[in-house]
Length: 139
Image 1 (tube, rainbow, N blue to C red):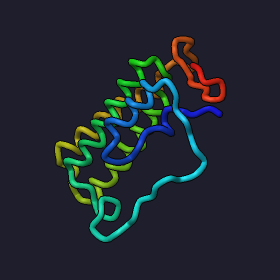
Image 2 (cartoon, rainbow, N blue to C red):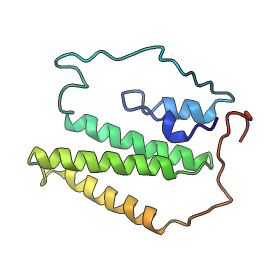
Image 3 (cartoon, helix red, strand yellow):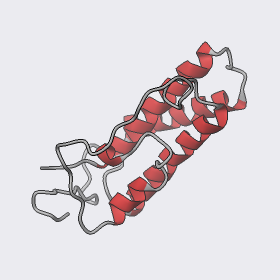
Image 4 (tube, one colour):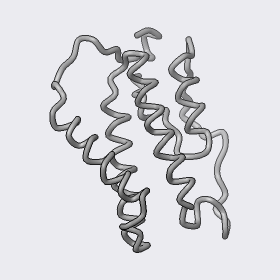
């Protein structure tokens, strides 16, 4: 079974820590069953608009993950594509809030444009990246 790095990227407050743990672990085990769940309740992080500082933290975590993946010489494309989706979502979110003049919105536009340029110009194949194959337990 192959596990891509993108499957290992959380969408919550552990986003800075968990990916680095996966990338530096000598062994990762994936289970088919859920061992925990999230409750949705009024006023929780999953039921209200994210404050701007949390949006910025999400984007910073994504950037840190891209750097970590590159430093470990894995293919960064899935993580970069995830970051592009996050940027598109937050761009839409801030547009709905009428915050297009906000500096965070401007940063999102710039970063999304940079990522799209990278994805459109990147080479199709690279022999200098590693793909982790968990069935073999090696890179």
